[in-house]
Image (cartoon, rainbow, N blue to C red; front, side, top):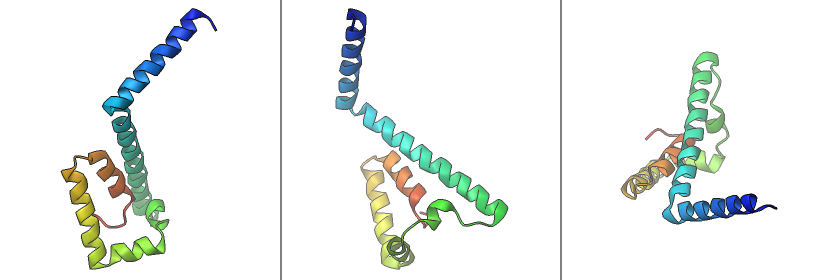
Length: 105
């Protein structure tokens, strides 16, 4: 390994550590994850409208989650979790969760 390659690897490691410490990489990962789920959900809704098929993400939800979201206490619990995520300024986590839920909040 030549000096240039070693210096570049050291620089990459330094930048990665710094971004991790500042929370920048975690924020980018959360935003990317939320955007991916949002894109999948939008596509599922488009397919549902065009072909009358159930959305893939919602259809894959387990029975226990379906029961929770169908009950008044489950909807309340979900609303509380979403409210907490808003309060804690975890908007990307909230978007990711919302894209995966059965009920609309």
